[in-house]
Length: 376
Image 1 (cartoon, one colour):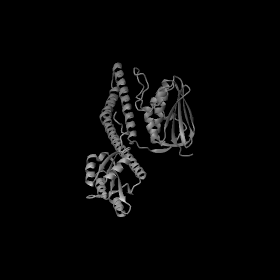
Image 2 (image 1 turned 90 degrees about the vertical axis):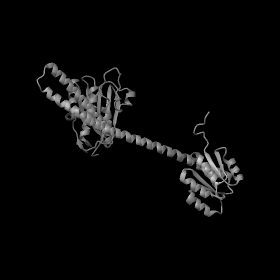
Image 3 (image 1 turned 30 degrees about the vertical axis):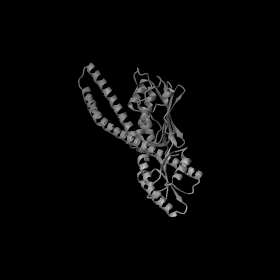
Image 4 (image 1 turned 30 degrees about the horizontal axis):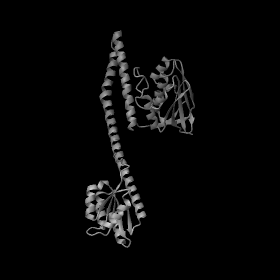
């Protein structure tokens, strides 16, 4: 069985012109590490040329003929800066130690004669440092790749937004305008039915495009807030035409309990959030039910609660309800919307530094959202 990466022994290179010292070093380290040995600086550099990427640490004597330990380490650092470097030197060779620190950038120096336990502990710590450093390097590269992928994705979203704006909205606007002109012309009942249905479908497509654009712009931080103080005593006047029609069609009653306190929000986006959540509440309320809207202070925030009476949301759906295009339904049934409303509300609220909370209550669903108070 091949060893896993965690089972592979780290490799260290021992360099000394005295064979007895090399054998002694091998005996100290062979149980924990793969040992490579070199009896000269030139031989050490040849080994590093072949196995450099696999070597965690080089342990070299200072006094060697032809090439000193410092010279070896100085050459290693240029090509393999992460390799840990330890110098073995005589206690009196202070000048050599200073040169090693300045030129070879050593991790530590060991004096002769060395203490086997101290030497072993030093090498263990050094190899551990090397391993952690390599892991950090790998993670950093992975993060760089992930960051570049995210940048590419953001660029793709921006291009998608331009495409949607120009290639879809422009011709769709023309279609809607010409349909409106056609609707003002003399038409038979059948022709008028066709035109009305086409206008309705075109407007629905326009709404889908607008929703997708809002979601993408919010994710790209391209929506700009215009926070201002808002004081409400009622939300009735803020309900849009679509929601008023849905409320009337289902014979719903709106019950308001609004505490008049100033809160801070982008008024245009606040009205969007309110109407999107009301739209959900009206759609999923039972006929002739009461939809409650409550506004009150909670801490330093103004909390809105909208409660509709109807079926509870399945627990598995609650966990995914803010995901764009999530629709919890039997695939054979017709969908109601695209599952974008709550995703958009969640994004817009996060831009305000607040959140959206949804939970089941007795015989219904409660949606709560918050805005910071301008007075406490």
